[in-house]
Length: 291
Image (cartoon, rainbow, N blue to C red; front, side, top):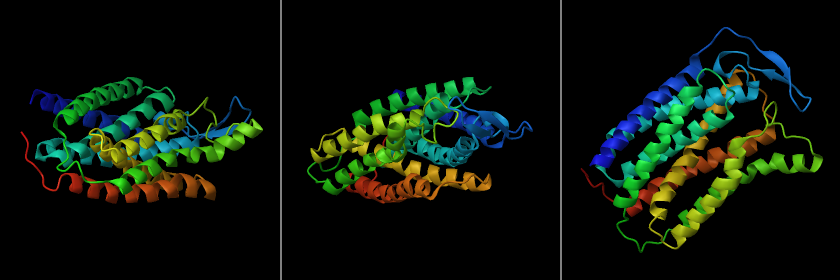
């Protein structure tokens, strides 16, 4: 009971901080205008010039604002999941998967956003989401058990591994850049891209391992699979929001990036939602009311 109370309190702070960071990121303006900047790579880049993303390129500012809009919507889902955690395993897993998605958002704010006056708010969001996630995972490992551990989930396991491979889509730009020694377009004015590192170095192998764990019916996989699939669905919604934001700000996106960076994730995210729902209803056919 005490752990659940801590999770609830931390989750409320998470919601408030998401409203603060995403709300200001999306709506705040200081009346600035676009300007041009020459990067360390000798490339002239148009900067957004307004709000907390003033020092970001137009492309990345569009990404950030599209993500902020999605986060405001996701916070409502997270709020509902937080208030309904006692209804059973499926709601707990939706809460945890949504919380993990918010933590990923917090990481990108902390490590990919140019310094601005929201620095301490970003730090607070990262801190609160991290500890909320720790307590949530402790609770899940204590309470989550599938109804029938003998049911095979081969297709779900294979699909989960396939989702992990989607992170390798960045190689489409990275490999040619490695050969030519010319930084890929996404580097722009930045020194590197933390999300690409996460996708390739962490998420790709993690999804493979989660799939293997499910094939071997390891208990932890019944927790990690719903979280992993929820996150893929989150990414699908985010890239849709980012694409709409780019359209609003007249940012041109090459067709190969629309297919590779948007199309693939939208398809995988949509299928992930269906697979995730089926998986959870197979593992837990009926909701159990828990105190």
